[in-house]
Image 1 (cartoon, rainbow, N blue to C red):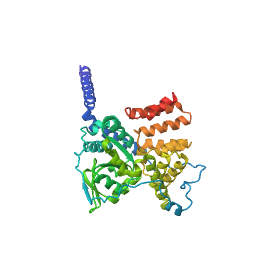
Image 2: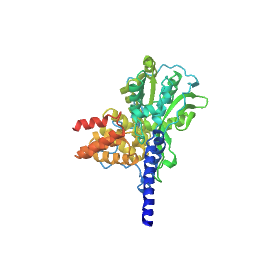
Image 3: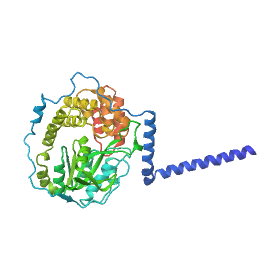
Length: 414
């Protein structure tokens, strides 16, 4: 009798436990609950993984035959100082007002890993769009753990989902250009950096450095500050010109402009030579090349120089510039957001460096479609076709809706 009662109790407990598990699974699948819990589970998983195996510094380059990076055809610092961009024009020298304040859009606090969609959403609201960051994220980063959105992805969304607007981005911006655009009533998005919450640390040596988009809606020369809509820190934040410039540099001074088709000529006039993407890159290539000579210890100058070289398919020179940046030292999350080094190492035949760097990037950010794409190309170059296919399929799983590069890779080898 006692055994039957005990067995009956165990049965009831098992049934009750199974019911609790099923209920938990059902509740977890509710979108609002999932969004509230999933990122915390991911964050805890990252913490445990890096407690066991902490992420170290960015690995330096393997020994190669070429000498350490030096600016191409620039034998002396004097030569750099006199380099001038080719055939450039400048905006009409119209005096700028000392203060500009555009009407702030409805503020949108970002959900986890969502500063790009949230910032773009606020900018689009200034042009009458009525969606939200969730609408944008569903298209360009449907997986919550995808921690990066590229400028190309933001442009992809505008062109495909808000086609009555245009979005363009350029590099090499400066404080005067930002003010000139704002004075013409154009809000500007920039990609810069921010400091992460210490609870997001990947180990005891984490630099807590991360990328962050900001929407600029005003400036004030009297206080030397921009007004920014910061999806993480709050609406109408004040950021000093000097601080913004420092935070902006690691991303090649990249800026994004949204405008109506009928406003394109005005945008062209405002950007002048920088409207042409090739000339824009040439101007910035010259500028970053000079920076590497004026301060050879500036890792971000070397990195930006390498990125601009990649734009012009000068891969071996770019790889050397990235070698130098890695030697000086880069933030451990650098390759969560920027991928030109992967291209440079692949195209210059330095597959071992490509695999080391993409493996490091995947260790920092496992859900990175770009890192998986180039890791796959590295494996493919070494004859590991099965491994390459798995890597590319992983990239597609992370971003199934808008990431075409991995699909093109699969088509190439099939």
